[in-house]
Length: 34
Image (cartoon, rainbow, N blue to C red; front, side, top):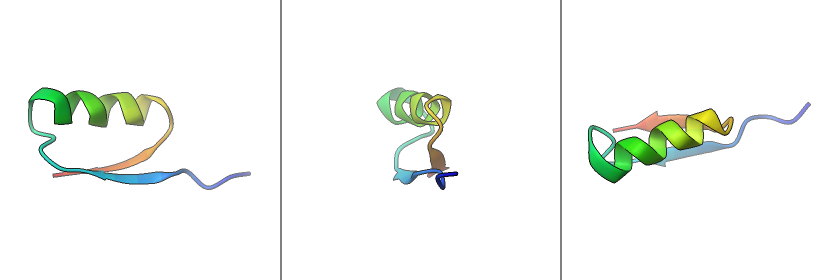
């Protein structure tokens, strides 16, 4: 079993940052959003 990949997304409250955070989460990433 592989550990989930982890990413930090800044500017995730709106716009492209929010979209990226949601898309990465849907792809199985572990997302930390600020």
